[in-house]
Amino acid sequence: MINLPVGIRALAVSFPSIIRTNEYWFCQYPDLFTQTKLRNPRRSKSDDFTTDNNGLDIWSIAVAPYLSDPFRGNVERRVLSSQESSLTLEYRAAKDALEAAKLSPSEVELMIVASLFSEQVGSGNATYLAEQLKLCCPAWNLESTCSSALVALQNAQALVQTGTYRNVLVVISQIGSNAVEEADTLSWSMGDGAGAFVVDLLKPNQGILGTKIVNTIATHGAYSHKLTTDAQGKPRICTSTGNNASMLAETAVDFVRNCCYGATTAAGVTLDDIDFFAFNTPTAWYVDVCTRALGIDKERTINLYPRYANIGPVLPIANLYHAAAEGKISGNNLVLVYTNGAAATAAAVVMRWGDVALGQVPAPPISITQEKQRSEPTTQDHLSQEKVFTTTQTAFSKAKLLAAKPEQQQQMVETYLLEWLATSLQLPLASLNTQQSTASLLDSLMAIELRRKIEANLQVQVPIEKFLVNNIAQLAELLLNQLTLASLTVSEAIASADLNLKEREKLSL
Image (cartoon, rainbow, N blue to C red):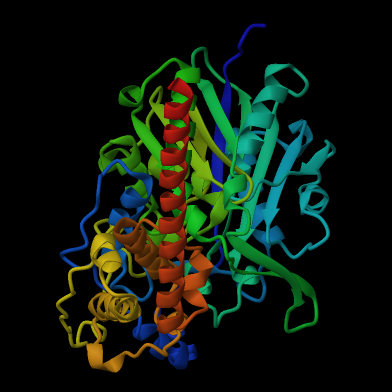
């Protein structure tokens, strides 16, 4: 079959009218901020990493600058007003994309829609949007969490490539503010937005050259979803951090490498050939994770997180739009787009950029400059006045612990945990005690850091949820039990090997 040049012909984005800054939470939820202020960690100078190439180490290095910021790099996010909805944003983005492509609604042959956390709990917005746009063509819903845009792009390309449809309109939205409780710190990172693009035949050698999509079942349970109602009694999906959230960190590097290497191989190019990278940025440090994992310069990408926060499946569209609008992408450039959808798919697409028409420019940020939009963490003036406490950590290792008397081991582990928490959270050691709940001191990011440190020192595996439900004394006991079990397993294996050796010697005699 002849591979026709198929790709993005026009691109548009649409954002709600409200720009919400961190000050909103300071005013609305002062108690929440007071609780979170206790978690104001810093990276210890002695917290060395084993290798820059290890997946979790790469994540930890990228996260480190943001651990001292209670808002974890969040600055602004776009949020729906009472007069707006996911359908409002989708209609505006779709209309802009069609106008940029110079297509009338009657000329559209198929529309694919992905509406994440829309007002329609039972189904997506496809038919509702088709009605508003006055389309006569088929319209269906598609969902693959934060990879929805690239999965829809692959489907659209295949359908145009085979001649099933001449063109496809793809519309993507996320209404993150609908999906979280404002009093949950997860709400700080969730934004609203929509994007749309037209997939059509392009000039020779342009369009999509290679794709790699894999499943992300390892991250199943990273988020927890439940059905609830809003203030008007309407049903909605409520999202919170799940028990398997640590797998988002542990698998991030493997997924970006697998997909990006796979897509470049399929396209017959290398990473060095790529002119621009568009990574999804569900966190402030995700660009740093991706660039470190692939060994590329951050100047070859863009980070919109300070401006929009996590807009999920809209991120790749927004990245491409702003990169093109700012001249970071021009005609015939090689572009690689990567997304990672929790408990769904991770995807990468290599394309040769064509003459892509752009929709209307969205409203500018109110506190983000071009310099701040790089990926550096921001600080609040009133937070910088906090006193910094320093604690000298006791030397700690598996060998030293096992060499100690059993009655001393519990205290050694407790002391280690207390000193690590005091150093990392910038708290005086005297303010902590072994009966304190770890959940009151750690968020999920800090729990990942502590678990990484413990696994390096003790070589024991502990589920991340255990760090957030036990007090310090119980966590110390759990670690000792795991260490004892691991030591017994090794001892039994050695004893079994010795027995087998003696049996083999008898047989040989």
